[in-house]
Amino acid sequence: MLIQVGRTGWTVVNAADPVFRDHFSRALFWFVAMSPVWVAGAAANPETRLLWWALAAGIDQVGAWLAHPLPGRWLHTENVDFAGGHMLERCRLFLIIALGETVLTTGTAIAAAPMTPMTVLTGTAALAGTVALWALAFGRAGRLILRHVGETQDPVRASHHSVSVLMAMVAGLIAVAVANEMAIAHPHGHPSAALSLLLFGGPVLFLVALGWYLWAVPRVRPRPRVIIGGAALVPVGFAASAAPPYVALVLAGATLATLAVLGGVAGPRGQNRGAFHDGRPP
Image (cartoon, rainbow, N blue to C red; front, side):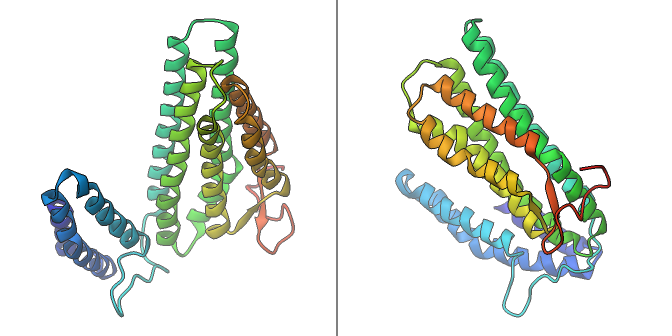
């Protein structure tokens, strides 16, 4: 808490722009106001400490999402001089790290399993699913996001949403990594609803977050076939909960790979399909 308050106070004093000085002044007020909750958690017994800290973390997230408003004072983000491209690149690099960790976890599970045709099958399916998520995030959708950030008059809003969406996408990748490891290690285990939830719920969270960002910020909509393909993860996941882990993993990998092949987005809402793209043939 002292680090947050000290860092923000230093930024208030040294901010070169009045807009950012006002923003960090409001953020400093939020940090100071919620510091008693963090202190109460530190002083509480172990049974209630996490509840206090969860409350403090929740307040912190709400403040970040709302840009730390105060009565009569809030951040007007239009035409603010902000390096939106730099912030977006940092988010993309973080997402690449999370994808790399997913591949690393999958590779470690493959290395620890006996080298059998089943390991080859499950390992291939797991890696195919991860590559498909990478393609969906960094393919045409990624190019449209980069173009929007370069042209928008509100880079703060675009960057703010990208940070929020990033957390959901990374959470989805964590679920995928855990599920891949479980399925590769125990391919013939008992059917598991929890495993199916991780295998299919993680990609659903990843894709919903990405789709929401595309819809809310650059104003592009997924093609109907992509919506149908993404929605298919839900019934396939329910069906896979009654199948052995290796079957569930293969179904997840195949569904995501198919979705990546069908991937792409159409134009801005209200325009004809394909009216806005990155300049390459669809």
